[in-house]
Image (cartoon, rainbow, N blue to C red; front, side, top):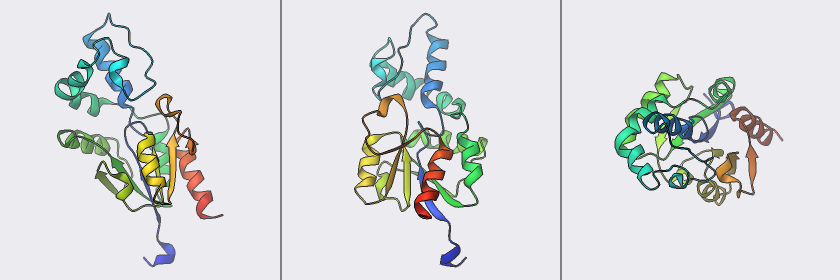
Amino acid sequence: MDSENRKTRVLLDLDGVIRDFVKSVKKVYKREYPDHAIKEVVSRELHNYFPIGERINEFIKDKFGEEILLNAPEYPGAIDGLRKWEDKFEIVIVTAQPDDWRYSTYSWIGNHYLPVNEVKIIYEKHTVDGFALLDDFPDNLELFAKTGRLAVCMDRPWNQDWKGERVKTVDEFFELVHKRIHS
């Protein structure tokens, strides 16, 4: 393929953008602690919202991580948004995951037939080549924006301090990128 027909490479985070990790944590938690009331999650500090406090990290990582990851639902319309734009963009998943979660993450991506060209499990997303990044974590977006590229926030309760570009769906992200490329 010559450079004139090359697809624009875009980066998308997985958890908080395509896969609803928090919803899956809540589901497993309610099964294990049916009498506990979970507060609305409005930050990445999950220990503030679950009655077991700091032990939520052990609950997720050491006890139920694989189940939580494999059974997490997609955010409504996220995968359809990827499929709608797969012929126009080179889609790369960039996700920060502990090493022992990568197999569950790859399985989830395969089980949901995500139309992606590449998967990178990496904490330094700003080092990955791509025109734009869609993420739910402002720290990742800030580092990416400092490279002069388009950083777009997936609107979630825990990232309301982000002042840059913001979308509510994966499809809206692709529409924004498409307009930027063709303006």
